[in-house]
Every structure is written in C-alpha cells, then in structure tokens.
Image (cartoon, rainbow, N blue to C red):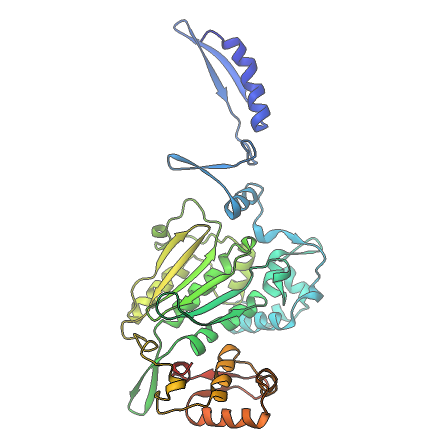
Length: 414
C-alpha cells in the first residue's frame, strides 16, 4: 500500500461526509507491507447511507422502506409506533361506549378488579400507560376514539363474501375504536357471512359453522393488535366457501418467517400499548400463544392447519373450512329470492330489497328502512312479520338496542 498516508486522511473525511460518523484509521505494518485498520464504534442510533437505511439479513443487505423503516428507526430510539403522542386530544374527546366495553370485559375476564376500573377515564388511561406527559398516545386514540380514522385513515376492518373467483357477493366495513371493532367483528361474521350445518341430537338443534369461532377470534384479534396502522391500509377479511383469508399490513421482524411463527415463540408485539390493553380486557394472553391456540382449535374442529403467507408490506393468514362445512351450498342457489325455490319461500321484490338492506346493516331500524326504500312503515312491518315466520330473520335483543340476525335460509336468499 503505497498511499497509506493519504488514505489515513481521506477515509475518515469520506466516512464522516457520507455516514456522519467518525472512525479511527490506524496504520500497521507486517513483513514490510503497510495495511490499514478501521475501527468503527458501535452506534446507539441508526446510520443512513445517502439517506437510505439497510439491514443485514443472512448474506444480503436489505433496504428498509415504509413501515419496516419506521419500526427500525423507532426501535433504535427506544420508542414504538403506538408510543408517539398526539396533539390536541384529551380524555374527554374519547368514546364512552369504548370505555364501557373495556371495563366490562376487563372485569368479566378477571384481568382487572372493579376497584381498578371505577375511576375516571383519564386515570384509567394513565394506569394503562396510554399517556405521555399530558398527551395521549397513538394507542389511546386507536383504542378509545370513536373516529380514529381522522388520524389513521386505514384503521378499520373490511369484510367481503366471495363466490367463485373474483365474484363479490356482499361486503361490510367496521369502523370506530379498536374496542368497538373487536366487540362487533366476530358476531357480524358469524351472523351474516357464515352458514351453519344443522343437525339434531334428539330434540336439540346443533349448528356447526365451517370455521372454529375460537380460531377466528384469535386470528382477528392478532391482526387488530399487530397491524401497522401507519400504512393506512385496513384489515381485510375475505370469506369463501372453503377458506377465510385475513390480511393486514405489518412491520415484519426480519428474524421471523411463516415457519417460525407457527412454532412456539415469545410475545413481541409491534404495538405493545395496544397489546397490553387487549390483554387487560381479556382478549389475548401475553405469552405469544395466540397462534398455537388457533392451530389447536382448528385441529380439534377438524380443519387443516392454518397457513401464514408473507405478501409485499404485510401478511395473510388462511383459515381452512371443515370438509363438511358449506361446500357448494351457496353456489347451488339459483338467486333463490327470484326463483322462490329455497325452502319453499317466495319473496316479493320489495321484500327482497328489505332483506338486502338488513343484510347490509343488521342494526337498521323501521324508520331508516322506510326512508331508504321509500315505502310505508306498514309494508316494512308486514315484510318483517313474514320473514320471521318463514325463518328468514331472527330478532336478537330488544327493539331499541338489538339487531337482526339472518338465518341460514335468509343468507341463501341474498
């Protein structure tokens, strides 16, 4: 090395200009030949190269982008995405019903005592570590605000029922706080999107759905907790006869693979504040056993083992239906409401419109139906009386706070 002296001057300057760090360049000699030793100190903060960040994965350098880059930068500074404070929001701006759901579930599941929750909302947020100084964290907004999409546009769940190929039959969106979404999503899927096989044990009617409820619950709560809400993409649930696909954006840890996810592992949530609130509500455990429990539920139910697939920017979970589930049931219906061949039920065009409106909003009221369809309340009353008598609709709860549930016959008539 003939220019070692010059390199001793140039290398520190170039490293400083490009990477913004200082390195020691030491000159050594061995058997009459000069060589340089570069000593690079370990840094507690991330270093960029021409404004870009890279991560060493195996034998390759991977450029970090999007949610993965955000998570990397926050992790290096000891902060998580849901730790960031939000300006201009106070506990008084949050949703009463969301707090009521949390208090109800926390006590019912034994994760908090009645004395713990019998306090004002501000103190409860402090106990859940959802404040920093006098500001609310992002997690508090997502968990308890009635409209978190004001800050995070994709913070909702989109559900679609598909037939053959890309045929979309009907869909829903669940908005509101994460606690409101978690409280509604499972019941909506099982009352509107899934058809149960009916059997009888003596005089007892038994309904067997194509997917185990516990597995669906674990899968959806995992998606809600670990979703990268900064990407502004909603959680998507695609339901077909043979499978259910649950997708969400994530900031994926480069050490994880679909195979390691299916093994026993420790809990390492992307949104630890959201995960802690879900744990306190009794929705999840804190031991990384959610996937293991989901697989056990599927095995006990007679379903194939669920599968995770990494997709660009996110992850997709596939839950497989039971072999004796709703195979070809929906495809075997020839637009039943028009043909009048399903269970001997024939609906008028107005009754068909009412049924579709109820399927689109199970909380819809008589008044809303009359305004939406421009029909009289007497017509709505007669239609509901007929559909209840024919086993198409069932009213759950009270007239004021209840909802409509479509029976298997009602679902086939859509």
